[in-house]
Amino acid sequence: MTSARLALRLPFAAVDDDRAGADQRLVARLRAGELSALGEAYDAHHAHVRAFARRVVGDESLAEDLVQETFVTLPGAARRFRGESSLRTYLLSIAVRHAGHYVRAAARHRSALERLAREPRPSSPTPDEQAHRAQLAAVLMRALDALPLEQRMAIVLCEVEGRTSAEAARIVGVPEGTVRTRLFHAKRKLSGALRAEGVR
Image 1 (cartoon, helix red, strand yellow):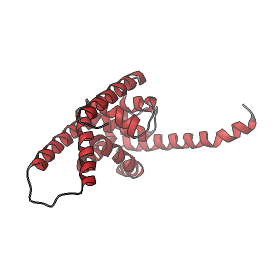
Image 2 (tube, one colour; image 1 turned 90 degrees about the vertical axis):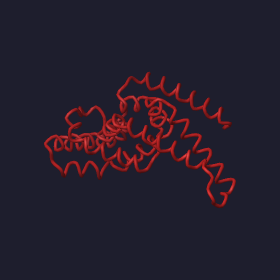
Image 3 (cartoon, helix red, strand yellow; image 1 turned 45 degrees about the vertical axis):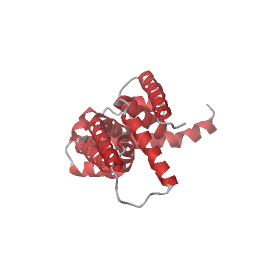
Image 4 (tube, one colour; image 1 turned 45 degrees about the horizontal axis):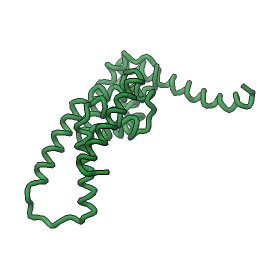
């Protein structure tokens, strides 16, 4: 490697090292039970965890509950943090472990809302375009709700968040090949469900 290319790479390596060091110091404080450390972790990472939770759960209120549970359990989970990923990625893996209950609750909530929406109501009709968008969103959420949780996670991490299968594998805690297999089956099931609903 030429000295010019090395010079270009060094600042990025230094940033990564600084971030890893900051993560390790913060985790050490979490393990020691410092409440201020939990506040700092929340301030630094809650927006990213919340965005992930919303994509996985599909319900704003339940996603917020998942975020809170993720951070409440962080001090205990910090004892298992080995520094093999960033603290942000580790937080996503905690959210993944707690997500099942919230995904099922959101699916039940959406099902109840759909039943309510089918009941006749004395209201003015919505514009055709708005109705079509709402119908398409409902179809997509039903298709996602029908997926096993592992496949849903693969879709959200790789297709919605744009992560590589290797990154998704680290977050979920499985081999990369398993993520790719889950993604393949999830896409096939989604495609079939959407076709069955008349969506091309």
